[in-house]
Length: 455
Image (cartoon, rainbow, N blue to C red; front, top):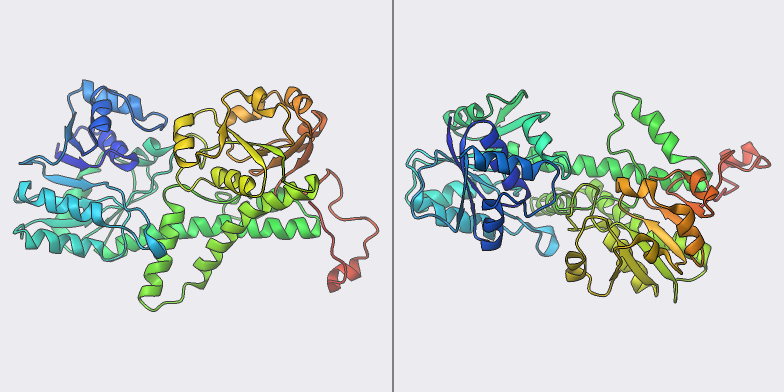
């Protein structure tokens, strides 16, 4: 088994460190954050990710995982995986300072035959930059491999150990073969290519998934205009094997640490090289519009947002994570606040301090019934399983105006109506039953002479 160093104890790095240790490798996890290092040494995960803490604890108990604060003076690891942050900067460009600093700090300590494996999501061409930094520092024999991650927050451990594919890109076939051997106990196809193609696969994959979400959201808007039900439309589309059902759920759009940053970075890269990424720009704009649609729906029922108390259920950008980066839920909450509403956020897992550090003007309430008391509307923005069985009848009775805006089409509309709510979903007719008015003339509809509106 191999000696592996993983630089960065964030979402990708911690999952990689724990998973490689579970595969029998000896792993050294490196991070410059003292608090994070202490937590991992104690077997505690600094991030909420199902199964991760147990994975780390088993690795520590087996002696397969050690944790180091800062960059070591010497490193006998055969492989160094980079899993540091690459946040978006102005205009969508990726900030590569953490990658550059990590490589510059580690090169003097590297084993002569070490392979640098990049798992950070980076612009196309970054692998070549890493190789140049290493060469300038005198590490001529160090090879670079791109091994992009395809982890989904909430299922990241499963995604790493049971992936759809493993992508390895390098200009050194020998280095590619060595990295491939690390995954010999993982049952997945391995795609070997060059550095830049591997980097592009990561961006193209995320951009395509984001495109599917924006596409179904645009279809949802059309469904509302003509009185169709996007949930049934998506089901019918998803049964086509060429399309598939994943990422065809209408809602308030995508967010998180990957899609917004990666789509923007790809759009920026394409523009820099003279391409014209019109589809990517439309995908981004549709996603922005989905947030605004919640405000439009609230105003359509309430008349105004001024002095209204609105509860937003959810702060995480998706369920099964405590990550609020680019969270659609919190963006909607802040837009409602800017529109004049008094906004209360409730999330069953994201700590109050995390929410208020980024959004200090938002009120956070840990008790669901207390949040609903006197409210004019509830917006379901993150589809936590706990919300399905919430005490809806009690909440409706406690509200001033029992309006439920289901931003994820997660709840049973009829059940909510029976509980006393006015229910509005995304791309769904306001009431159950025929999608269009029975008196509408079909010929006029076909000619576009009649607009059938549905909230």
